[in-house]
Amino acid sequence: MSKMLQVRAMSGQVLWGPQELDPLMSLEELKQQLARSMAVDSVELLWEDALLPTDGTLSNVLGRCECLVELTLVLRAEELRPQIPPGLYISELNNHRLSRWTLAPATTPTATVVLGGLGRGQQLGQLAGPRGICGEGAIYVAEQQKVSCWYPQSKGFCIPGDIFLGTKTLPFLEPSGLCVHDGWLYVADSKTHMVSRWMLKDASVGQLVAGGQGPGDALEQLNRPTAVAVDAAGRVYVSDFGNDRVVRWPGQGRSPWVEVVAGGRGEGDGLEQLAGPVALALQETKGKSADTVAIVVCEMGNQRITQWWPGQTRCELLVGGPGTCPELEGPQGVALDEDGSIWVTEKSGNRVTRWRPGNSHGEVMAGGKGRGDNLDQLNGPLGILLVKKNTSAGRGAAELDVEKGLLPESSRYVGEDFVCVI
Image (cartoon, rainbow, N blue to C red; front, side, top):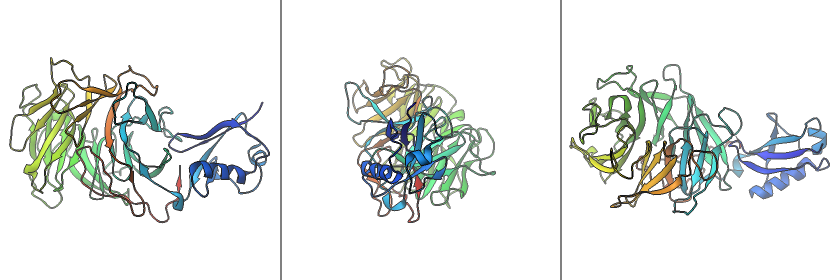
């Protein structure tokens, strides 16, 4: 039986093959072919977690393999070209993948799988129940008991960065919501009932930001926090799902008072209430005052998107709501576009819709073809990230232009000694 050769990225994409193996092909010739296809000067190859030698033929080195031979590509630091291509990025809980869709309406929208899609797991190219995502020089994905960091490349595949695993005192049980601010990754964990932050330059350094007092409805407590955002002044906003409220915690070194800024009047569908606030986004105007920040809340229980203005106890209904037509179907994530459009991930509808200002009907921008794992389908969409321009990270990194209503500017850089397996 002839042998087949295939080369993968760590993020799961097949970069080369499967192709019938030429046993007389030298390893150096294979590396040169792959380097040309990747538009880089050189590559290395991993097999069974070890670098392949530079001499010999494929038959000499891989002779004992049967049927399909699968290798992993390695790029060295000088070959890294991190770039987040424009698009709509969606984390799919049940497909265990991160998919990218076009930002423009399409008759039949289809996706490119950026990460995962190889079943649930911790192995090469796999994700495990991805939930929240954010982008700031890299793409961060909340998974089962960890947050993974990935650097997309211009060729469409990704290289892994640090893995945030928490600590004994600040464990990750179900990290759900993410955002990046001023060199820190903020993580809302719905099972530990706390929000922590982690230094981007050292994934082992973490601090408690909010909660951590066990589940409860006191101001210093959280109950299943699902999303987190930070404003330009460093104040931390948390969707307190189990308490049907959004709370604002002061930034480092500020007033110790915690405030309820949306809901907090029991579960309900009144304009002064919330029901299952699962995600949020911030709409900021110029200035450092918290009074310039409006909060857009995605309510799973009320099937609606609401906006809460500073100092007001009643909200403005933006999208959906009980009894409306067309309804949202299990809204789970929300993002704000620079033109005022609202993007919503709908888990039950397995779609993402865009709602333009003044329009009573939304446009399906991703999915909407039933539940499934085809490239025109979604299965359990949760997190959402809008990238409007080609953006890069690394030495001399450009500012990331991400329109998701959450993140002030900050950057992530790839170190000079960075060597990655992709």
